[in-house]
Length: 166
Image 1 (cartoon, one colour):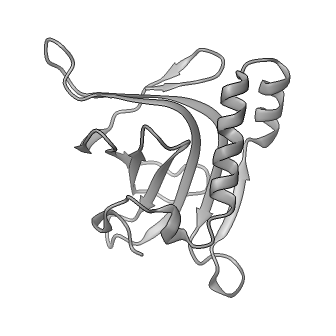
Image 2 (tube, one colour):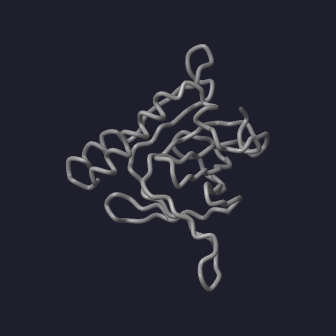
């Protein structure tokens, strides 16, 4: 479940691939083209409770080629692996608006193209007092961390090789 800064929530049907105390991996099957990405795609979501971001890796199901990565800046990340009374596992996180899209090899001389998204929405939310000072600090930590990662492989640290092409 994705908790938005306005208090609303969004749910997405996902499959739990793996969960440990330090990370969770979910699979979402993209069946329709969205945001300029082709369909079908597999989206592997990587969630870490201690990092100020999460990562979605979009791959073509036919050959596993990576199409894009998206890093979402987040607050709390929580996983209930087995809710009391049974039922599916649930992952919850606080979305802090700012996202970084990375398109492997799409830039000049085959470099990764990187594009920040939702910066205006973030500024408006801060001005409206929808983010706490701690959340604003977390956004800046994530921005700095993701901006200064020189190689995509460094940003993917902790993502098992089975889920990435680097």
